Image (cartoon, rainbow, N blue to C red; front, side):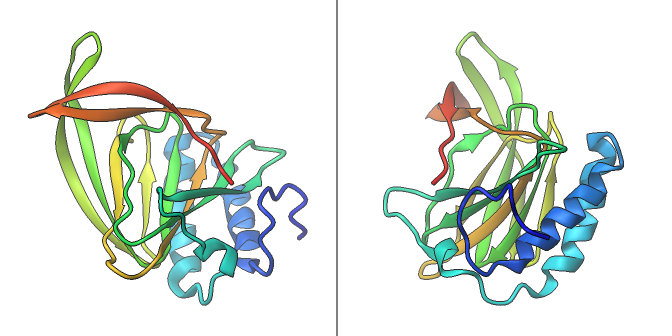
Length: 195
C-alpha cells in the first residue's frame, strides 16, 4: 500500500503502512467508544517488536518536542502523528479538543499524568492529578473525551523517546493549562504545529 496521503517524508517506515491498515479496520466499528478499544488492542500486537526507527523520527529540537504528521486519511479523516521527545522534554497539561485518540510509545519511556477538572471559574480551572502511567516501548493508551486531559514527559535522561498518536480528526487547536498556584491553572488555547 502506498502512502499517497503521507505528509512527512519518512523513508523506510513500513510500520506506518501497518498502522494505517489497522486504523482503517478499526474505523469500521463506527463510534469512538468502539473504535478506540479495538485500535488499542490491534496496536499492542503490532508494536510488540517495532525494531529500528527511521533517523528522521529521532531528530530532536532543544526548544521542545517535535510533532510530525505522518498520514491523513482521505476516507476517515484521522491523523497519524509521531512526536519526538528529547531527554526530559515534556508537554504542558492539555486536552485533545474533544477528539478521540490513541497514543503509543515506539522508543524510550514516557510518563503520562492524567488530570481532571474539579471546578471551573471564568478563566481558571482547578485541576487534580487522577492517574499516572509509565509507558515503555510497545505500550498503548486510549483517549476518550472527556477523559483526555494529561501531560507527557520523556523520563529518559539520555535517550530520545518517540511516540505515535492517532487522532480521530485533525487537531489544530487544543486547550493548554498554565499552573498559577496550588491547584489553580489558567486555560489557554494553543495552536499545534507539525514539521
